[in-house]
Length: 376
Image (tube, rainbow, N blue to C red):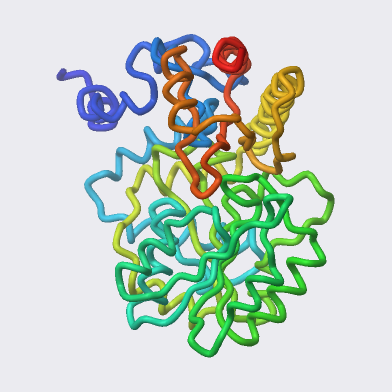
């Protein structure tokens, strides 16, 4: 021990518990992690194939793992001393100034922050149904009334029906685009026109957790309306394409006065390692491209399996596929779990549809085998 300096000691004795997040001592000591240009690692898992939570099984990347370990050296300091570089890098990424950015512990924290901010004194919120309802559920706890508008025949947002629900009581309109759980994507011109028009009447919240998976050239983020000073909030996350779901970091983008209002209601602080992880992830373009490639391969495999079994599904613009099971989804999920594969939770009122996440190609093989037995 006398030969170890403080940095060495922190990296060995002091962070053993945290290393479990990174695959344990054996994984960190593996030759793959120490190569100059390794492929992203997937650690062995003897449990079920986890295809239920839209995670990226290939992350964190090597560069991010190294940044997290470095971040432990500042673990004795509060995170506010380290947020400025991340704010500035995100602002450059979005083409805005740092006062437009609100850092959150994952995009779920951002959704809840907005739910609190716009639900605390009542009023209405309009949202598609089904969608990712965290914001609405949280707002409802503080007195908001939620107008849930059924998806259309293509399982996409029915913007005309949503607009008809807007009144002078409406505090916020929520769009998840691409949508979760359906994976649908609004046409570029349609979403731009809708948000531009409605933001003159109330606040638009655009949940863009899956924006990185969109393949349509030039598809717009609603941050372009934030730049124009509109009443728009955009949420983004490091949980999906960057593979940091367990690290918990995301952010909101909004006009500075809106951002300041949101910032006052943020409840969970970031950790110093999470800040280091996000900074490294933003610079790791090789891993970003790798994740996109692997996602397309896995999604193609899912669709091929569903096609072969003649199961209806929605073309997806995310890292999951939503398909019709032909039976109650709770029953289907239990049958899949018995075959060693976990898939998405129920999304009522579509109670015979299931969301399956992309994974490794090994996961996709297990999914195919399980589905053939369950659907057979």
